[in-house]
Amino acid sequence: MHRQVFTHESWAERRSDSYTRLAFLGDSVLGLAVTSHLYPRLEAERFGAGRLTKIRAQSVSGPACRGVAERLGVPAQLRAAAPEGDAQAQLVETERVLASVTEAIIGACYLHAGYEVTADAVVEAFQPEIAEALEHPVDFKSALQERLARRGEVVEYGVVNELGPPHERIFEVVATVDGAPVGRGEGRSKKAAEQEAARVALDALHPVEDPEGAPS
Image (tube, rainbow, N blue to C red; front, side, top):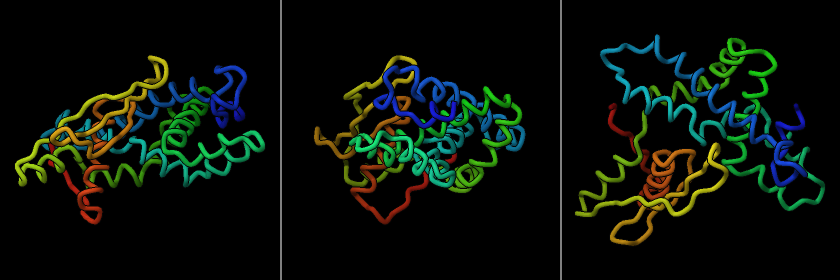
């Protein structure tokens, strides 16, 4: 299973020998573990379903998973598993791959040790990301719209591509203003892809400004 966790589908003769199925499983375990951790700790009066959803999404986002992967030394293990001389080895640096491998690790741990042990390990591994989401909740879409509104402009989002099979779909979204693209993003849902596109657009407008979204 260790080999499967660190095998990209382009490095395997059969898709089933790659990490994709384990990542699909791990994605669900990750979401449940973080939700179960947050739910009893946050006051119902202040943290409704909408706010909880945003905090969870930020805690388990692609950038969050990448941060965990880097702390766990995933890039080095991926480089070691990549076929020698394979140009695909550069994939180990991409956020999508690092996030998927992080989820595959979680899926493998779930199969080996069960939910309780895995959930505890997930919460510990993602603690910095969870704390950041609680202290600095970010809603890039709201921040971008507010900034554009000062200029009398409106942003629109459109799905330009859908990658992967139905159970592991990746959406690619472009944010446009007056028909001109201002940001592009990918995500496991359209909303996540829109947030990433908004973040890219904000970085292009004001790289030094760190947007903070509304609490609900």
